[in-house]
Image (cartoon, rainbow, N blue to C red; front, side, top):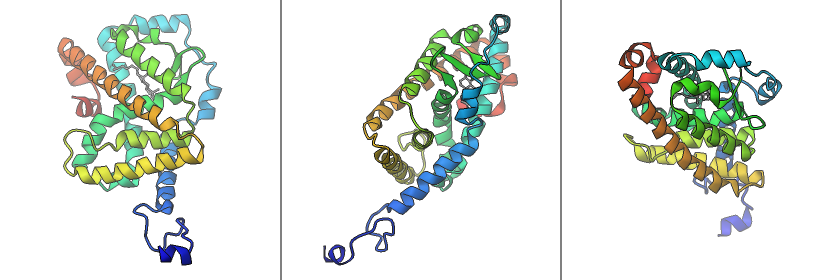
Length: 264
Ligand code: CLR
């Protein structure tokens, strides 16, 4: 191409718009996703690191374990909904997400928000003692005993452990979260091709960051994690259906409206 020979192409400027996604756009997209992640992640990694010594006492664990099934479910549903609310905030600040129709935004959040919460859980997880930051202190899986869904809890803790093993940076977590959310394969999308375009640019952003960090090999591991996430969320829905059948009143009147809206 003659043009390229005369003017060595500087993709950062992309004056001719030769690339469908110029590097400058990708950089800007990454920056705004990272910013949005930072502003909605509740705690910074260093803050969580400093809180690691805060563990629940035996008595406190007992108190959680002695709660009734519906009390503990309601309690966890409230905590989860808080976390989901931050994910909604995260999504709203992603350029490609904001441009979608309201219907498609809701469809993506319905299937993706819980998955992003689980991705974010790895930041709140201590692999040294397998505990998660919950209700102000670090708690092991046993604290969730009265939920009566040990298999889900075990799977969620295993997932957090596996995510931590990847040792992602905050930027990588931010881009991966965005990719989990903006997924054109989700059901009930009106304008699938628009979601597809948004997904492609987030994908490019993630690849760009992994390339810069010399960790391209992470990409296929992250796709594997996405498959695990999908199975975890269908297990969560299954447990929720089981619970709602057994405790219809709690599920109907005591669960947060957003939790009901997104998951039922
Ligand atoms: C995830 C990251 C968020 C902060 C946060 C809040 C609530 C936590 C959640 C994290 C991880 C998963 C969690 C949840 C409360 C209950 C839930 C520990 C740390 C467990 C897995 C129980 C799920 C129970 C459902 C079946 C109701 O920024």
